[in-house]
Length: 231
Image (cartoon, rainbow, N blue to C red; front, side, top):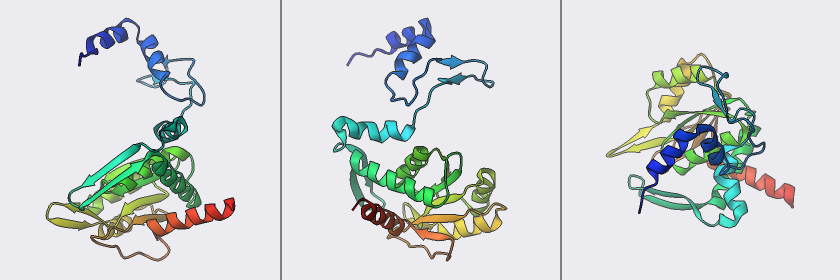
């Protein structure tokens, strides 16, 4: 397979604005860019300052609309969890759209912050895309971070909601997240409104009433409610 690296690099060098204008045509825009780069916006400038798009739409919706909904969006293979899963674009879009609605039910909207304190599971991808779908800002915190470090990030972000899991897996051990999260919230000055917790079979969490909500049952209830409204 012949590389086009030097050809592409030369094209960029010759006219960066034209190069990125052409690259931008591969994106679905709600409002297409007229200006490609504004050097006056901030110390580094800003690309496509007059344009609007949605990352989630580009990652999922347009593929389903183009007839690729049956194709694999995620191939999950975890030796530690002894789990494999194939998730199509259509299936992932359904999960993401539902989770986005759930975020809205928790009062999360455009510009609000959400912390993701999760292991590398498909639900973490869905969480990032759900935030992007509604314009919320997500902050990924490495799963299993110590309570003090997590508390620092909670205070820095000021999240309305924390999306987490009951545990993470490492070779030879299970890391319970709930005790770390409980202590972090205790230490933090900012208190999130709620936590949505993905229960994993390797170690389930004990919820704090009024604050913690089960991921699976909350998503199931949202889907059931949507079905009833459509019936």
